[in-house]
Length: 87
Image (cartoon, rainbow, N blue to C red; front, top):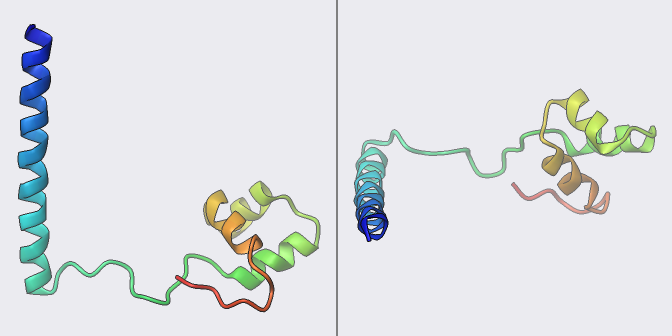
């Protein structure tokens, strides 16, 4: 019973935190301080990833060599070479 009460209080506090966070983000956007990453920018170079793959490197080796995440490497390798990269 006490655990259920604490769980309920935790859920309420989590909702309040989300509301405060959303309000803060909204104010920051109005001030021009909250922009995020610009559209069209990439974390890595897809052409370099494909080049390293063609040389026989594995995905983890490519991730380490280029300084990007393994997930990003897989996303870049999954595209056809003529497809544009969407950020």
